Image 1: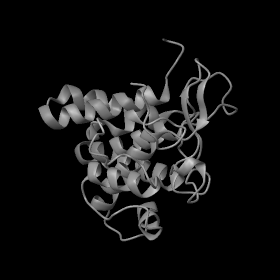
Image 2: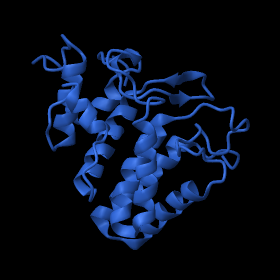
Image 3: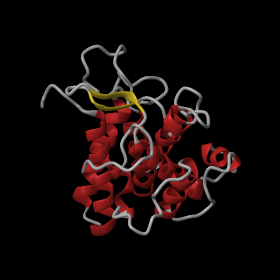
Length: 219
């Protein structure tokens, strides 16, 4: 729609074109990723904390819901994009992670239905999952933090350190293993490791509902 710039849709596009460039080295994909990123960086309506409203063209900004899931996906993508296209993308991603790690978005242990991030949006047009935690927000937040810690030059403590301190996750390098360990520690008695489970572990973020880390029968 010409009247909409859906924040998570832009984040998926940025992430996807960046990954495709990594595999193909085709500069057309890098150029498109930069176009999306530059739109985000230059948008005059972006809030000071860099967490986007659910749509960059939402009609009632600043009185519109934020979307932490879009922010997390964007941050992870920008960290990789910065390897190919410059430090300004790293700096913006760093600002997003700083905000997501603040009390405004980073939930205390045992709250927020045991999710990490608060304030995500599923679908405003459908009136569905508005200002709730979402599993893929947590997934891409953890991925972004892992990427950030691997590449940062200074040794400041991030939200990843806080999750380790809480003993909510194992300290491992691989994001899939990290995610499985995180889910296991968050949800006591989960059947995630049940030998009869038919969950494809690569796609765990899409198989859990916002109502908590429980298996969902919905696709």
